[in-house]
Amino acid sequence: MLRRSFLQLSAAAIASTRGALPQSAAGTPIRLGFDTYSLRAFKWKALQLLDYAGSQRLDTIQISSLDDFESLDPANLARVRARAQQLGIALDGGIGCICPLSDSWKPTHGSPAEYLLLGLRVAKAIGASSMRCFMGTEKDRAEQAPQSLARSKQHRRPETCAN
Image (cartoon, rainbow, N blue to C red; front, side, top):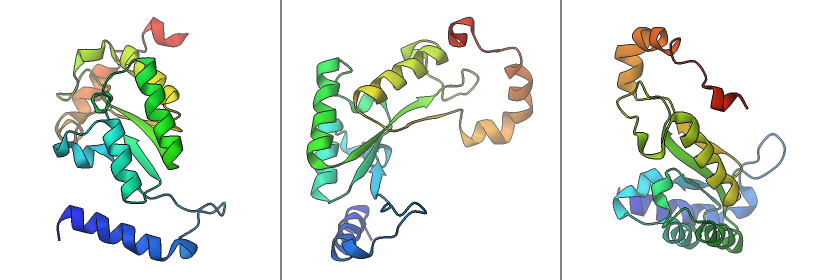
């Protein structure tokens, strides 16, 4: 089954059972959506991703990379937030690796602390309820865990993060 077919069938199944959706412990319906990383091959930006989620009758997406936005300027982020609200779609934010010891670390947005702060600012601007980041890859954990732990003691929390 193709991923697209799966998403269409899933959305149809959910639409037909809207009243029977699983409930969380608090009695709130469990949201259904996707992580934008899973659709990265389309090279869509946030507004296109939101329109697709709306067409599939999904109610949440995780925008998992700052590259998923046309730009990070406040006006664009406000448009993303407004479109999500218009569609009734909850947003979660996301950034990449925050560990400078990992092969997946990219210093494009500055230090790990600067990258985290930027991600949090963007998440807040789009009305996200959470923001995902990660420490490294499976390879980092499997092959370099002991060395990484030893080296991490040398990379204490920078003074700029303490405030």
